[in-house]
Amino acid sequence: MNAQSDIEAGGANQGDLFSKFDDFIAMRDGILASGVEDPFNLVMEKVLSPTRAICNGRDTILLGTYNYMGMTFDPDVIEAGKEALTEFGTGTTGSRVLNGTYQGHKECEDALKEFYDMDHAMVFSTGYQANLGIISTIAGKGDYIILDIDSHASIWDGCAMGKAEAVPFKHNDIEAMEKRLKRVPEGAGKLVILEGVYSMLGDVAPLKEMVRIAKENGAMVLVDEAHSMGFIGENGRGVCEAAGIIDDCDFIIGTFSKSVGTVGGFCVSNHPKFDVMRYVCRPYVFTASLPPSVVATAATSIRKLMHGSNKRAHLWENSKNLHAGLKSLGFQLGTDTPESAIIAVIMPDLQKGAMMWEALLKEGLYVNLARPPATPANMTLLRCSLCAEHTEEEVQTVLGMFERAGKATGII
Image (cartoon, rainbow, N blue to C red; front, top):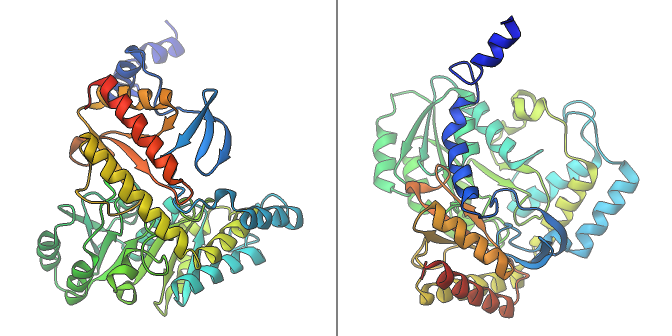
């Protein structure tokens, strides 16, 4: 046997770098073996609107896209993207610190500063990179990060990249957070990381109390408002605004891929030294900037969200109606009352969840199937993300679909 054959023969054994994924492969194979369509590989053949698409040849209501404010098909947003595409081309082919800052990038950051009424704004190529970059740059070796155990993967990855000491506390537990803060060694740098809305269950953090405790203990505060920007708060600035503590937050992280309706991420801050981040933040310095058409759509969308009170009110009505309807049908939900545009429907297990997901898809409804380890407490969830463009009639149609699919699969 030659050396190449030896390598190939050993590949299936201890030398196989893919062996760490065997449990996931077995889980996926188990779902597919039951005849259920792959819930993590859906293809949308044509997108008709913020709330509908053709999936598997069927007109499907979209209830799992995070398109909270329905901006993806806004005529002004689309026109801004077209104009930038024609005037500036398809991409920058460079980093923001080299040739990758166009007029549109500055205009987008200006729109963010105006939206949040803050001094500084920094746009990243993705929301993931915003967390990865800001967290890993401001909190390094010897510093301590106190964070909610249910924090998003990008937050955890930012902690790991910066090599700070990450100290998690029980989800939304104010007392547990305070205890961990008080154990941080004297003189060490402290950063508390929270989220306005947690994306799995759609529950809201008690930010008012948490931010107060963080400040009393000398910590800086970073709040990820990815799932609340545009929707929560009088001006759509998120849970920080609704709780009245936006001025006490050192950093607010957000994304363009939710309410803004495109792609990208950002951080806004009033810290006087914030601009140095443009030169020392590796995920910002060493990646290509967003295409001109993307920042043009983002800037236009952000400015329109400043005047989106009617849309916000309708989205709240949608959330209340769907939550009440699902609850009355007998489904177990992630929150007792509607707290955001996310409504999580708890499934008995992954197999049942996959069956329910497929039954809904055949009814003409797309939702997210969320599974461990991404979900808290090893739960399997069907995650519904409402949109301001869903009509009252669509919400009632969705409830009928859930009732039929729930009875067919034995969930209710």
